[in-house]
Amino acid sequence: MKKYKQIILSLVQTILITGITLFSVMPFSCKVTPEGVQIVGGDYASPVIENIEVVDENSLQISFSEKVKVTGAVLSPFIEGISDSYSHSKTEELSTALKAASGGYGKIPVTIEAQEDEKTIVFNFTSSTIIGNSYELYAVVEDQIGNTLTFSTRFTGYNSRVPQMIMTELYFYNESNKEKSLLRTEYVELLALSDGNLANLCLYGASKGIEKGYNFPPIEVHKGEILLVHLRQKGEGCISEEGEDLNLAASGISPAGIRDLWTSDKDLCYTKSADALILENKASSQILDGVCFANPEALEWKSNVLLAVERLYNYGIIDSMDISDAVRKPKNDSAAKSLTRIDAEDIKNNIEENDYLEEDYPLESPASNWEMAARSEGRI
Image 1 (spheres, rainbow, N blue to C red):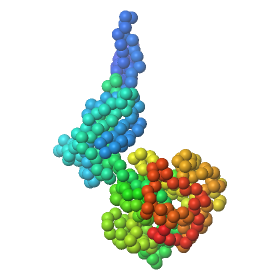
Image 2: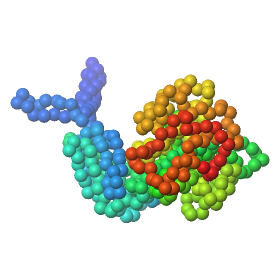
Image 3: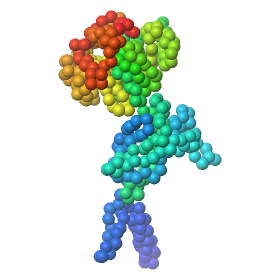
Image 4: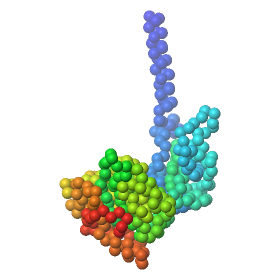
């Protein structure tokens, strides 16, 4: 009998200790009322970042899920090999990457400007960021209850000189020849309608998303300049001409004197059967140009492509969202032919004397503006 009493006593003690432990960690708080202590629900969720926007050369705007205040912030240059380092030593106070993010290798002072809703914070920089350079904002925010969020976000210096650009030729052929080292692969020809810098621009297929697209380097282009963006890394001679020498590339299609730019990916960033190819400013989410194309067998857009087609329609770039009104391309891709913009030559001749005004851009690009013709890379 005595043995049973000891067992029961042990169980009671265990239950009591377990209950106290669980009660202490459960998400509840309490408040004192005239009737005594009342248990109320607790909030232990950190604020969530909902949107990040590079406003200009001197500011970054971040929206949160709830009202917050900033308890600390520092802006530092993003240094390849250091800011993205995974190295860590037990003898060091901070890891290499965290030291860089917190300004250990140089920093720009930041001032804070809370918007009226207190959910949106503008981080103002005392020094202007440089077009195309990478930066990292390291900050801590706190909600009204005291929950904190420590975060680091990387962004590219604001580009205030985005050029007006249009696509003028789409080449779909992908050569496979084990006996050749210089191969012909997919490219997009573009024409600059104005001077500017290509930083923050991205060329991508709606079917695979902007994350899989080609990100342009921060290089200067001039009105009337023609560029070839090669969308598959394959074979030899795939050299991006980001400087003044435009004769470095030596692939199967690399015209002399024309700037060649290459993706580092071996896989194509769009779907050949039916897709919307889009040129977009990632910093502002503004579309510069777009082309919708489909094989004769394609009967409807995939859902993610349809959303992009709708955006192009709302921009006035295309005149119909129906896949039957898209630019038609053959199912079998030709090595000798490409989709060519019919009015490209007239546009190029016109910009030599005139600028396309902001209200005229982006330009219309309906299916009637395109045709299958002999490949003519760099020769509008």
